[in-house]
Image (cartoon, rainbow, N blue to C red; front, side, top):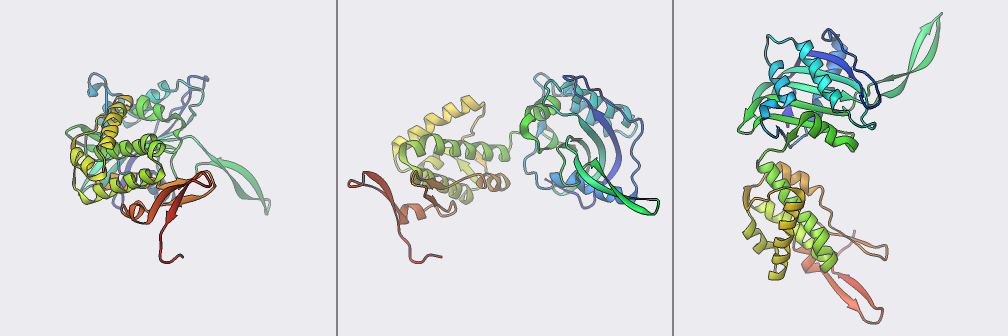
Length: 349
C-alpha cells in the first residue's frame, strides 16, 4: 500500500482505447492535460485512493526475460526526464488494444500519469499510473438559456472508483519493480493482469501467508466439512487463525501438530496439500514469515457458519478457537433419526 498525502501529478494524458474484436479504433491525444485547480484537486485523490488500501503487490513477469515485458519497458522509459511522454503513452494504449481479443472487453478512456512523491513504506518515489475508465454514469446537467433554466442528460466519469488501474513504483526489490493493481470489473481479469500487465505475485511473506490460509480454507470446505461436519470445519479454521496470530514464523510441521488431534487428519491434510499445489500451481512453503496484512485480509474471507438443512445457522467466532469444542456438542437422536447440536451458555442477548 502507499500513502498519497504529499503526492502530485507531474504529467497526465488521456487517450481512448478501442477493441480490435469489434472494429473500434484507438483515439490519441497529442498533448498532456493542463488541469484547472478544481479538476486537479478532484483527480489526484480519485486516481491514487484505490492503492492506499491495497496490501498485495506484484512484480513484472515474462516467460523468458522480464526485460521483454512491454509495460516494464515503457514505465522505465517514462521515468526518464528526456523521454517523449506523449509518444510512449501511445505505445502503452496500443499494447492494451492488442490484448482486446474478446467482445466482452470494453472500450474506454485511458489515463497515463507520472506521479511524484508517492510514499511507499518509509520513503518517497515517483510512480507511473495507468488507468482504464470503462463505465460512465448518466447525470443531469442544468443550464441557463434565455433567462430560463433547462436540464439535459449527460454521461461522465463518476469520481468514486476507477474501473482498472495499476501503479508502477520507481523502486525495486530483488524480484523487480513494485506494482499495485486494482480491477473493479473482474469479468475480464486475465486481460488486465496477465495479458496487458503480465504481472505475478512476488515470492514474499504476503504471498506465502495468503497461499497457506487459502489452502486451509479449501481443505476445510472440501475435506473436513463433508466428512466430519461443520463443527470440525469451524474448529480447524479458528485454530488456523489463532496459530497464525500467535506465531511470527509459520512452520507447517508444527502447525499440523497444533491444529490436528488425530494422525489420520494430518494425513488427509498432507494428501490434500499435494493435490492443491499441483492443481493451483502454487508452492506452500514449509516455513515462512507471517504477514499481518495478508492475515487480516484472509481472515475476512473465512466463514465459520454451520448451515443446517432445517433453515438454522450456527455462527462461530473465528477468534475463539476453544469455544466450539467447549460449548457446542454434536449428537444423533435415535427417535427422530436426526443429527443435533447442543449449545451451552449463561446469558443471551
